[in-house]
Length: 432
Image (cartoon, rainbow, N blue to C red):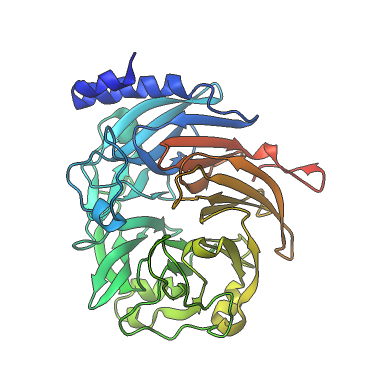
């Protein structure tokens, strides 16, 4: 079948036909042992597997349309684009396209599963946060329910509290007062069967200019938020201003644009931010984090917080404890990612390994995935660099820890990387 000819038929038939074409074309793309590649219907942002590992959901935007070259803030507001969830089914150790669920939203960005595994949560740009029943999506009869985040919110990332009662979203362009960039707090309100049909946004908190990501601490008590820029209007106090690794005036968001100041990370008490009466006191600290900090992940023992500083081509490693007790000295160390514009990061193998997506997103060239061995002192040793597609964006881990899912945004592909590929000190690393 000619994939391009399928564009002339109706949207439903087009999606079915294109899925078949893309699957056939994906065979043979994985050129490294232990890596399989699968084409996606649109630009993929995040992949996440169901708890039983039988299905993989991928958020896709621009389905059946070319890549969008305009500003991200505009991309989140379009009404002429098909976005949604592409579902792959695991069969005999491989993935096969199974179903596509359009969400009717301008974009489909980061994903999270509620702890019971029954609901998938999607950041959907200016439409806010979408909640989709997993089994209904697999059966092809899901109806998304939404929690709005305000006009022009540009909702991207979403995380769930450990008890599944709340979801925190980051709204990259949402404005509160004169501050752009905020997090939203959504009460999930599941029914006795775990279905989510009436999610409610109960509040928002301004955090900084261009908020690309947030992460929860291992125990769920702290919310870590990355802000790419210090707000121009009424900037807050930010710690570690004397560290030249973290505080700068020459950060460039994109080649050819003016230099800007550094970004920062914010530490938030989750119980306070949920409580409207205490929300104003929920920020515990703000610490400078170099040029364009964009992703964060904490170790399971809460001994280290890893942050990708996209504009510095570095990973910053902070002490979560010192971020609160001594923020001026919270940086433990930093190391090069051996690539350009790192974005997605993921710990695996009992936090002994770190995968980094060197996106190279501002160049017309493929990116790469770098795998590091992380010692107890959090020093990093490069184990392997893997070829990726255009703009490798996010990395997630399968429930059994045996696979990393890497989304290649502009080249429209999903790479599944076996964690058994990597060795440390001559010993094969067991999956997490």
